[in-house]
Length: 267
Ligand code: ADP
Image (cartoon, rainbow, N blue to C red):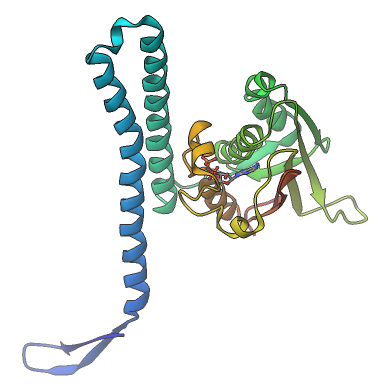
């Protein structure tokens, strides 16, 4: 605990009393520690792709460029690593903006059937490459109040993970439906669910997957172009929509993410 005593004067001579300032330093120190850990993680994450770009460029310059086949494969690695670097920087910027609450959310009514259809279509190509079948059921006439761009980001991050961590020929299922409908047909909560028949997540890792840069299998995540930030962005965005997110998973069987959020954002 940090205690500061500040004297307060009415005028130059007249003393009014003292101001006692007490601050819980452990919280502040913990925040500082988290911040410096984050900076260390970011530096490490940025260094990895840069080291790859540098290493492969040097090897090319030292002669590998004369073997067309090798040159081609090294260039592909350099290209992919630059793209990952780009995604990484984009995700870091986005996360820091969200955490600093610099960009206010813009809530408006979102018509779920077409919103979900459009969003899923953005990843159909990715899924088709792996022969992954995406099925979707969205309650007709369903509207929710949300920041449309942010809601799209939530669904895209979860869906691209589902595709990434599901082997060829697997399935991804998406549902969006009201929760607890009353006799008048009204509801104030909705549930969005994304499940896959993928590799699953071990029980011991489940509590940590929403942490920044946490990955179950670093090599696999890197190989698939992952930044390790997708789920922490999702968690923040769901929080800012006053919702909750839960995950259930069985290794070798699949994973289900369930989001519940209010239909209306105010009052
Ligand atoms: P990444 O960029 O590595 O995918 P995320 O924050 O999106 O980072 O996810 C964190 C980790 O959680 C991933 O590295 C992966 O190990 C695991 N994960 C996320 N979604 C799934 C899923 N649908 N199936 C299996 N594992 C998953």
